[in-house]
Length: 527
Image 1: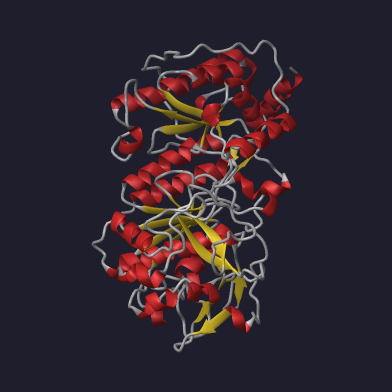
Image 2: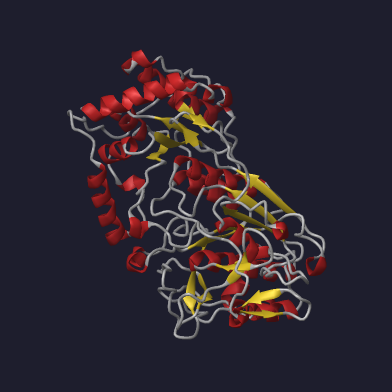
C-alpha cells in the first residue's frame, strides 16, 4: 500500500516543518469519559488500496446524474476513507450523548461545554489521538497535531485521520452522528465549476443604456429590478429600513466605497455595514491562518451590492434594500465551498450570524455538489434562532444543469432561489439549476440575449459590472424579503415568507421546477 506510506511520510514532514498551529489550537483533554460502542461491524480493509481519483470521479459523477447532491452517509467506510486520502485528510465529526434525540430542532439550546456533551467529544478525540499514536509511534503525534480550526460552539470538531481502521470505527460509534471528509475537490473538472464565480469585477464605463434607468434622485437601477417591480415596492415606501442582512460569500472589496465609508447617507439614510472573515486556509496541511475580510474574488462584492448597495445621487447602482444594514462575511475563496477551510468558514459564518440578535436575513450565493453535515448543523442553528435563510439553487455550464439543486439549497429550512429569463412561460437562465427544491425565481437574463444580465457594484468606483446566475437571483430575493419585513418589523419570518408566496405567479400552486414562481416585489410589500 505505497500510497498510504507516502501520505504518512508527507504528514510527518509537515508536522516537523510547521508547528505554529499548536499555538492556535486550544489544548484538549484526552481523558476518555464516555463509553465508545460500535453499533455496526466494521469491514476489514484486507490490504485494499484506496480508490483512485479517477475512480472516485466516476463514482460521484454517476451519483450526480442519478440522485443529485452527494450525501456522505450513503457511502461505505472504504469509499469515505479513499476520499479522505484524496483530499487533506480533515474529517468533520458530529457527536451527541448516547440516547439524545431531535438535535436538529434543539441544537440552539445545547451547551457543548456541559458534562455529557463535553464527555462525548473528549472520548472521541482521545480515541483518535491514542490510536494514531499507537499505530504510528514514529510521528510523535499529540492532540494539537491532529485537531484543526479550534473549538466550536456546536457539537462537531475537525480532526485529521488517514488510517482506515480509525476512521471506520469512528463512523460506527453510537455517539457519532457523522464523520465525513471536508476537503474533497473535483479540482478542474470543468463542467462542474461555476461560471458565475470569481473573475473580472472591474467597472464598465459605458453599460448599454437599455440595461438600466436613472432615478430622479440620481441612482441608477438595473433593468431586472423593473421586471421584478422592485421600483414600485420602493414607491410604496419599502426600502429595507430596520432590517439587517448577513451575506455569506467571498467578502467585500476594501476598494468599493459604497460598501464601506459611503454605505450610509443620501437616500440610504443612517445605517451600518460590517465586515468579518471566517476563512482560515491551511498550508502544508498544518498551519491554518485567517486571510482577512477583503473580497479577493469579486463575487461577494457583487452580491452585497445587489442586496443592499446604497442609493446615491452620484449615479452608482442601487441595491434592492438600500436602507438595510449589512454584514458582509468572507467565508470562502470562490463560489464553491469545497475546501476544508471553506466548509469551516461557511459553518462559522452561519453560527456567527445565528448568534446575532439583530440579524433578520441570511443570504448565501454559494454551494457545493457534496453535502456537509457540519454546515447543516450551523444552518439548523441559525434557522432555530429565527433567521430567514436564502440559498442559491446552483449555477454551472449549460450541459450540467441536469444536476439539479445544489447544497445547501437542498435543505428544507433554506429558501432556494434560481434565475429565469424574461417573459413567460418561465425558463431558467442559461447556466441556472432548477428542480423541485426551488422555492422562488428572479428574472436575471434576457430571453433573447444571454449576455444581458443584471448590473451591480464593481470592486471599486461607480461604474457597474454585470453579474448573473442563481447567485444574483438569491441576493435579489433576500433584498425583496428585507423590503417586505421593513414594512412591519414585528412580523415573523413565516409571515414574511407567506407574503412572498402570495406575491408569486404560481401561488397557491407550486411548480416542480420553479417553486412558487417569480416574486412581484410590489405585491409582496402590499400583501
